Amino acid sequence: MVSFKFPKITGNTRDFLLNMSHVPMAMLFLTQNGQYLLAGNQEYPMRLQASSKTGADISDLNHIALTYTGKNPDPALYCADPFKLR
Image 1: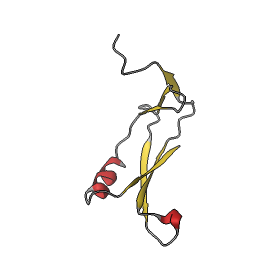
Image 2: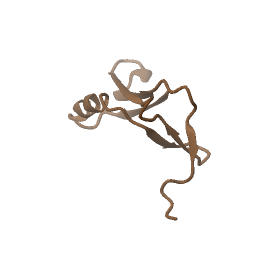
Image 3: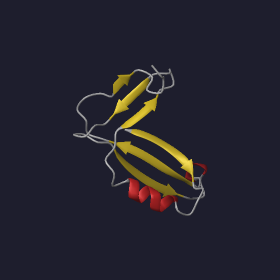
Image 4: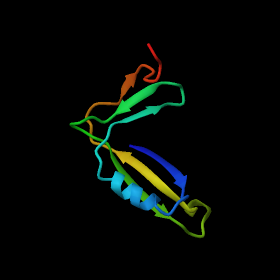
């Protein structure tokens, strides 16, 4: 599972996220120690879940929380730098 938040910036963000929640995907991400990981594949795709919350508490800021989940039995794969020209 990978989670993050971003501010509500535009009115069409909700429609975009709703459409993306139906798309199976693989996810390439960069860790804080500079390594690339690939999570998800055609057999075990990652799925997007989004939730929004606004409230009085500081933790209830006006944002959208995104979570990518998947049920892959294998851990994410380490990858060489996919953006480096060879």
